[in-house]
Amino acid sequence: MLDAVVVGAGPNGLTAAVELARRGFSVAVFEARDTVGGGARTEELTLPGFRHDPCSAAHPLGVSSPAFRAMPLDRYGLTWLHPELPMAHPFPDGSAAVLSRSVGETAASFGPRDAGTYRRLVEPFLPGWDTLVRDFMSLPLTALPRDPVALARFGLAGLPPSTWLMRRFRDEKAKTLLAGLVAHVMAPLGGFATGAVGLVFALAAHARGWPVARGGSQSLSDALAAYLTDLGGTLHTGYEVKRLDDLPPARAYVFDTSPTALARIAGFGRAYDRYRYGPGVFKIDYALDGPVPWTAEEARRAGTVQIGADHTEIGAALRAASHEGRAPDRPFLITVQPSVVDPTRAPAGRHVFWAYGHVPHGWTGDLTDAVERQLERFAPGFRDRVLARATAGPPELAARNANYVGGDIATGAVRGLQVLLRPKPSLFPYGTPHPAVFLCSSATPPGPGVHGMSGHNAAKAVWRRLRQT
Image (cartoon, rainbow, N blue to C red):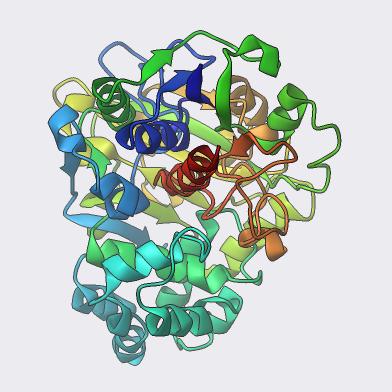
């Protein structure tokens, strides 16, 4: 009998399997797709030689992850590549705010009236970033805070809505960049703890950067899988699990799935009926014949580029998708251009680029024209650079990755108490109605992102049970 079976080979499932195998437990992973990866994959979606990331491409939380940093993933081919600027936010007048590794450069891009405010906001947290991120991404029951004072100070700044944080700033550039950071998790700007979302992304950029994985996000997943294999774990791909009886006998079962799928497979009935999924996204992967022709020079040097004219426009786009049940006329866009730092991603002189905007849950329309009109506002002539495009709305995203219910790439709405208490209010979020079945996906704390910490935290709960039985 195996000690543990993991269902789903996304970053969290693979991390949970590695953590268990490192401690001497026998582990097998079962993945429905033919390759591992979940939200961290790389595929030729458009033309031969153009390697795209169907979901996550830039990894600010991955490079800072305490779980990943404790593993020798570089020995298995993972190399982080850092663009000159982690992120830029251009404006219609050709200027831009930037999120740089340098706090000073970032503050200066906001203008003199907000530079000092920004420094005072972020600088106190940076010396202890590694400790803070470990405390922030762990639960008290899985790891006691190493610096409870810093964590409390962070909570005072981050638990209120991001709109409260924006009031500290006087000009639009700082407010808009912060609004864009919050929108990465598709959270309404006025929601609980959204200030923490913006702060975490900003601090991550200053402390560790927003890198891409050389060769694509698949490199991270492949490194985790190779490390697991060396530790004695086994991987089974192309194996769809429809019920627990499809799996071999084990002392524990760990699911890197949505709560909905877990309830169906494990026979938990309505156990997660109150869990809420958020808006979907509409994503376009592009093969380009040259770099994106951004008007703002800073955007040409950045790995990630946020698109929204001001914080009011960003807020309106989020409300349209989250509360009004319609696609926004001017969607807020998150875009990533990996080939500005990784020439292996496209043929010589060519580039890969992706953009996504928020749409209602399960939306079936086509946002291509609205996305490209937005891009043309900040990069005139963009359409002329397009060699090919691959579009994916909520139905296509859910078909590729079953965790993206209704196109929700966060595997659950990031609003209300569900920001912190996922998948339900509980001191044991990784446990389920069955004592031998656990959940480790982004539907558990600390939530969405390619960081493996949900898998890491769940693995702790699993090995504690295994040592008691």
